[in-house]
Length: 284
Image 1 (tube, rainbow, N blue to C red):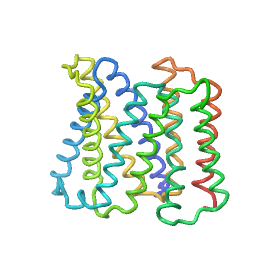
Image 2: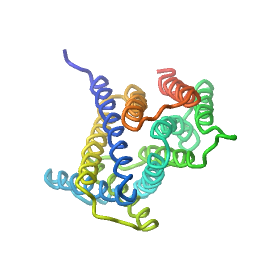
Image 3: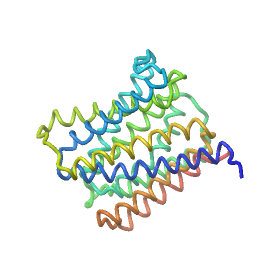
Image 4: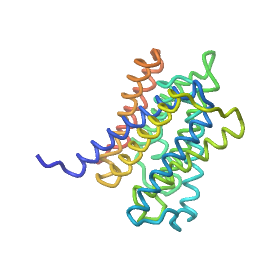
């Protein structure tokens, strides 16, 4: 059976989300014995150098002029913000909670596309965005159970949403390898900022090295699969499969870290995913 572009895109998007979920596990585990800044910096440098070598081998520019275009600089700034705060969130809070909040990113992109690019958004999709934000509030619990650390995930999702919006205005023609090198360079910058603020870099143990290597491999695989997915299938058909990341994250968080998401987290996650799927597929 021959798969259509949309089917291939959906499969690669699902594989990408699985890769990112496993990368989160390695980052969270490595940060238990190493400074988070060192973890992000190491994975960022390893991924950047590997993607850059792959680009050079294919005869592509390692530092193309498009990297310093206004749109790409804005995109890079948002990606550093997203990487920095999301890294803090998965380290300092429950992985399941952070992953659930991150699922609101496509909803922010929908709202941002209307406000920034003037795209027409129906009343139904605006209502879906509001329901998704309500799901985030349920997870955050703005009251007696509120934890300010949960806001780290919110800032992270805003960074990733800004990156996705800026990508729309980015120059065309950059390869998956060039985009991968740039993405991991931003991760390295986020790690360098954290390490400069916290200090305490140490020589990793054998286990620490294995965790850093695992985070790099799965992060690179996820990034490459994501880029391929977005360039293969229709955006409306492929993007909803981003929500599979929550499934992988919940399973890994419960199996490896003993997390047990409470009822509010499950309800909030269901609202975010349900409203996101509606907003992305409504009218298509």
